[in-house]
Length: 280
Length: 348
Image (cartoon, rainbow over all chains, first blue to last red; front, side, top):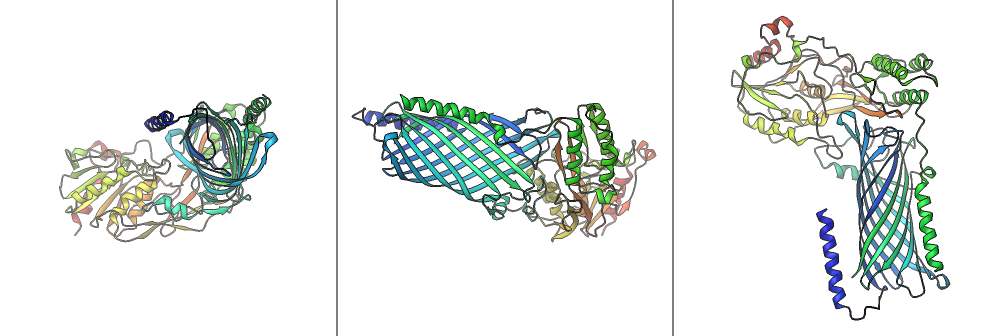
């Protein structure tokens, strides 16, 4: 929590100093601009990892997201880091026999260029690409405190689509919709048959750096193994020239085929985020 | 105003979207006796590796027991059926956890089994030496013989942590014991844990890599989907390796990862295994669960020693078979430990 406090203080200090430096409070120049946003809220996860259990596990948690966005005259850049760590339980068995500690880490970089503008709708359309790296690691705790680990780690390149709609003419507040569908990914921890067995793990030397060994054993996959979609809908509301509020709903779903397509990891994440934006 | 309305509609749509889990995830399987039995049977059919070596015809098990399950079968009746199956497999790593009770294998160790414990410690061991919570170490009455107890190999298999650093105390112990004539390692009540920890300790006793065991694992859904034999290798670890005489004390209660340790040490020329045959099960089990909340373990491998003598359900035979009888115990004699001390004392 100290980390969040430090970031909040930094953002507030920067914003305050900018406020005092601003001469004309009525002018907000959003293009070009740099936006830093610290968000939190609620994340909700529903996961079925068929390799581990036939049941759906659900849980929610307070996430943390930090993003930097550059709004150019004709392009958009966004860098985002997301983290949450939740406990998931089955709705029919509770947590008495099996529960999951679920770690989510997302890193994204998106780039898009203006491709169309619909002035009658106050809407601008951008098209580009997103590089995203995602870790969903699940420690399955069973009776006697024994745990098995299951995870997906994918770094993908996807098609990125963004629209921005101003709420009113010349308004600084706008609604944006983002959709990303990765079409090629480098996936680790593939082709697992059960918690112990994967041809990828056979020759791991636990005395050496296991992460590096696992990284080298990844596979390039596409829609045949992984279908993933991320969709964001956000509303950016500026309360002053330098500070705004970002209301965001993010939907993420992926279906990842394990072991010759015998099992699926189906992961559904819904995030409701509220963030404080600062124009730098 | 129109835009604001549209925005509200979009956010309302989101909440509908949020509620549509069923669009993306099929609902949980039905919690019925028939469905639970089917999942249980399927899990073993898919994952259990030891049917061939235990000579169990799993299809016959289905034929026999499925008839006892119907839509009116109660949880108690299902427990009776499933627990009978688990007992029939009688694998150390196949057990069942339910609200009606837990079901385990039948250990080969008899009820009164003095071979599985240290007897009259004060007669053989000097107290007051240094200890560690994971590995207890002392010297014998003959101070040139080190005696260490490793009561478990558990710990360290959580998430990305694959070994437990507490076992690295072995380096500290061996650096103190460099001048010892020999070391006795007592595993007689070690039920196992994490095999990486066993290899961590065993690596401090070998001067070069050696294959100590082989295993096959179930790698597919078909009944014959097994991997080829794979080698388990012990490698030198730590700054110093102890290459003088070592005696490992074993019993029928020495099991699972402790048997990994015994097999690894058995591959070394300066190590002698003394005591009773070990429990007989490594298995590499996984946990599974049923929609009614019952959990159970399934062995996914079977192990053999370096000569491909299968040890699952059989155990590892000691080099010198010694038992501490009930009569010995009542007289305060630990035959197994005495034999270990004798071997080190007489070694050149």
